[in-house]
Structure formats: C-alpha cells, structure tokens
Amino acid sequence: MFKPAEPPQDGDSRARTYTTLAAGRDFRHELEVKRSRFITVLRRAGTEDEARDLVAGLRREFHDARHHCSAFVLGPDRTIQRSSDDGEPAGTAGIPMLEALLKRETVPGATDLSDVSAVVVRYFGGVLLGAGGLVRAYSESVSAALDRAPLVRRSRRRICYTAVPHAVAGRLENDLRAAGMVMADTTYQDRDTMLRVAVPDDAAALAAARDRVLQLTAGSASLTPDGTEWVDEPLA
Image (cartoon, rainbow, N blue to C red; front, top):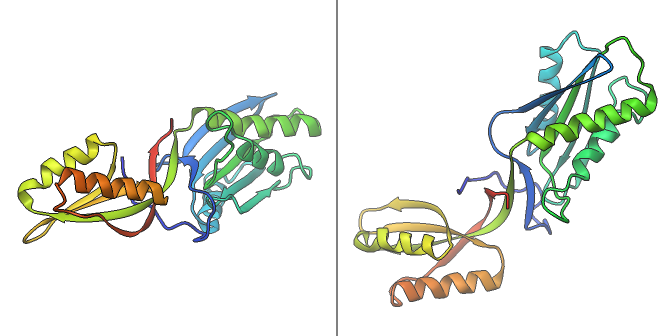
C-alpha cells in the first residue's frame, strides 16, 4: 500500500531501503523486573524534535516516575543517534536502549531499523538491580517492545506518471498492478487520467517500467519520471 512520505532528512542518502515502525499511534509495552516497572513507548519519528517530543510528553504523563530514559535513531543511513540515562548510572540505560534499536535484526541478516524514538519510564520497585541488572532490564524492555511492534519496510521510489484517456485508464491501472507495479495515485483531469506509479529508484527498474507501459498501451503512452519519495511497504 502506498503512503506518501516526508522527504528523507539526507537527500544524498546511500540507503534505498530501511525498516521503521508502521505509521500510526505510539506502541507501548510493560515489563516488570524485581518489582520495578519498565514502561516502554515507541514512536515513529522523522526528526529530532519529533523524537524529543515523545520524552517531553511522557514526562508529563508519568510525572511521578523516577526515570524517563530515552534513545532514538533517525535517517535512512541512521546518521542521527542519541541516548539519555536520565539519572540512572552512566551507561546503564540510554546506551543499552540505543544498542537494542541499532542491533535489531528486522529481516534475516539486516539491522536497518531507523526513524524510531524509544522511551522507557521506570517506577522503582524498592529492589536495587545493580549496573548489570539495569543494562539487561533497559535492553530487554526495548527488545520486548520491538518484538510486538508493527514494522514496515521503507523504500525510496522514483515517482513516474503517464496520462491516458479516461476510457483506458481503469484497464491500464489494473494491468500495471498485475505487473507488480506500486500505484502512487490516480488523478482525473478534464481530458485524460493521470496515473502515478512508484518504481524502484534505479535505472534498470525505470527502464523496465517504461518498456512495460509502452507494451501495455501499444506505444500510445509513455512514463515520465517526477522525483522520488519514500514509500511504506509490508515487511517481507
């Protein structure tokens, strides 16, 4: 399913795909360790402001909690990485959380999770966990939340368009879908219909898509590139 996406933070990104949270509401999961409550909240975030807004909001919601530790990784190339222990002993919360994000295997052999902000709210249960116990608890809290969170693949796609008569637009759209193309949108104009497709962002895929449109329309329509967008797709 095509979802219009915000432009990538780095226009020169080397990445063509990465994994992130499905668009929508924040995802929450709670873990109890020796009577301490660890409430993990994950949010899809495209900017540092969006990532930090999650921390600020949870400080207000869980104002009586002792710690609001956080970590986030942003950008197709994961160039922005931040973490905070928020009063826990140095290195026992934020860094383990960040490593849980960075080392997450999203598909076999791939650790490409990004555009994710994670906050773990801790209510102290009266039992000291020690440095090693805290590292395990914060890491496991984020990992357990990711185990259950909905993820999607983001692909950089070349958006192309073709204009065809209204009478053939429906058939052509069906044929394009049947050929495996991802439809971006359809616009009905006065004299024709504008079909937009999202093609993998490489020269071979673009050439193949152009050839397919020419074949399906007996040479009467052509495909014109019109910029790139990031598209959400189901995680294989």
